Image (cartoon, rainbow, N blue to C red; front, side, top):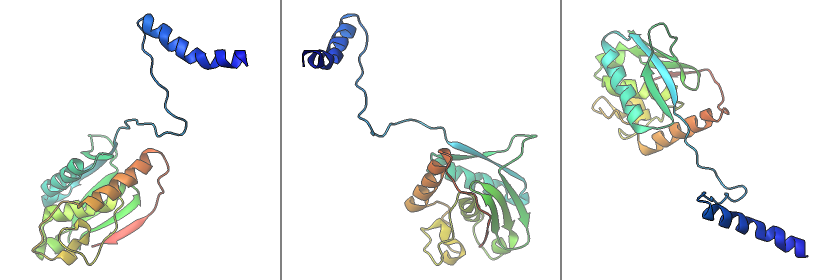
Length: 188
């Protein structure tokens, strides 16, 4: 009985000794408590060298996502490196073929641009597919992933709060190494 009291008093004695010696005592977290830790954002690189007249729209779309989420960042690929995302201008309708979360090819179709759709909205929307978001059709202009169903008058290139949260969740999971891979084709 006497030795168990001494063992229980030992942590208090250690704190007192550290305090007197100029050390720092820190309380240990409770077992099972969530541990806060900073994890660097996953960086995805994109190659817009084949985006032709849409290069500026791609840069703006990437910037919108970078400003809106923390768990993933989109950066132009460095010379000689292989990109996670390729952007290719073509004459069809915009579409994205994903190979896994954060990887794939965006076909920046001139057909939608010819019909009057906003190029930065198209870019942000297609990058949303690369980031794991599905189409949300039909939908209002306030939903980036509503795509063309919001109409040509919609120029909103920004994801809404729910879309940002889903991307954050997708890449929080990806940072822990539990993200699923999948091949998908989104035709907008």
